[in-house]
Image 1: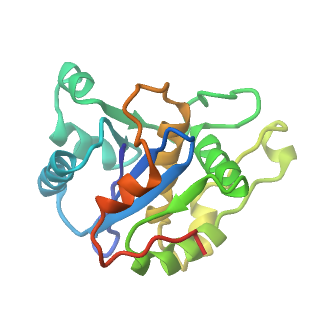
Image 2: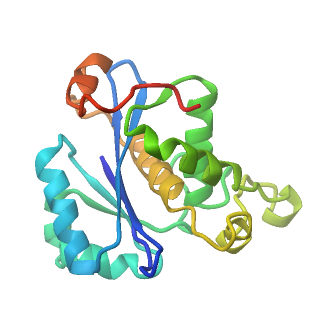
Length: 212
């Protein structure tokens, strides 16, 4: 799955991440890049990544300007369905556990957290993103249960941005969306068969390691 968090420009980059699941259930994450491009160019960039990868779907953050970016990629709903272009609304109802999670964004981060705690999620991409990922992960805040009807909820994005000096956590948002899709989609029979197969497909200059 390719996961695209659309940035607002002016230093707020769009992030494209590849998230895969092995037949053993392990989830592999590779940050493909940050891109300071306008909507039409971003759609073209995603199409190029899609063509060169084994991704079967694309998950787009459609909150804010992300909707227009996704529509530039595939303007017609029937075309989006055929391409496997999925919309991600952070405030939508959770897919797996609507009684546990407050919204879909909270569900995405919670599923990622659970996989990390189980040592079932590995970062296999360019190590230059590790420090950025750590910084953005540590900025996440879980809301008080009393403020969200007893459900698990991340604080609103504005509060999280304050922990990042006003920056948006685009990289981890992209990862969380991709992990969410992989964790909630049914098995389709074409998961990566072995961790080593995936590593062979990566640039040899990249390092394979656990998150931190």
